[in-house]
Length: 226
Length: 224
Image (cartoon, rainbow over all chains, first blue to last red; front, side, top):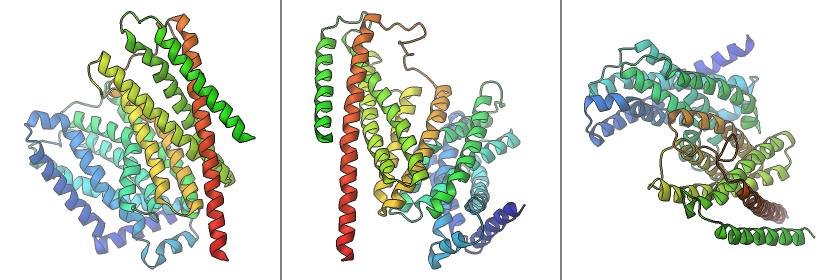
């Protein structure tokens, strides 16, 4: 119980700090808009094609924009040595990590939910056909993105070229999760249900989330304390 | 002493390799694919060596995190570098074969894609190492990343398998079509590649150890 209260306190602290400055979420959403705009003039696509590749386009936007939020997650704690204070605080590394991951999850999901209607308007696509299923895929895919992103945010916070290293290290690891999320999103936007032919992707996405949440919780103490 | 052993092993590996190339070149052409089929004698051993290297890198990384002994860290970086080179060789030979048989250098097929993703993962490992100055931190973070990368490999392979597949199925087991009397040549080349890899790893390991010795001497000189 104590553990979950600590997680909640860390998450609430991060969200409060973010909503006061809005630095990461504004930058992330503006970036998502810019990429969506670039896509719409880079590929002048008819609606049918857009429907087929919607998953790919959306998740590239989410992965790029999400990285901005994740990059800030631990970098925000550097001024005034807040990170040292957090590590010295009487909370376990796992609680600190989970709290930060939760805060990032809320922020990345918020950026995604705002980008989704923009994407739908720009490309004349309806995304509400199977909204709840789509929301499930968003929730699972984003958790994968945040779990990996948060632990690597902790890992890269003190090293050279931090901003470059985070996406370079996380995207190859995220390949299976992104692939599953892209496949499922494209299918759902095209009006196909989650059934026999793409159920495996859903299971893979859940498996990815579970495995990496567990591994991160085990290794985070090592990353933070050494 | 160890130097001598390394020289002997290195020369042995090269000698076996040269002998293999000589005998493989004189084998008859494969009926359907012709001469280019023989690339399998190099392509597959390279893949197997790279896979073994990845497994050793995992064991060494876990070993470092448990013991904080820098010998494990040196082993991890040595096998990762050599494994990456072998995987690159595997990708290149596969690409040459693809050009001859499929008519294209690259296809986004399951195995090609997963091999490329593995290559990128372990290249990321080496880049991460270069970005960190402090040896203990570098070794710890690199070990954590190596564990993440290794866990990812099976997930990548399965997910990409569902995505699409075009790579030929294995020809060695389960009713494969590999000529039985060629298996001997294949195994000899497997030995040559593995031996070559082992010697390269040993050389890299010694280099890593001298590097650490140098670093500690420099620190001592600064402290004086």
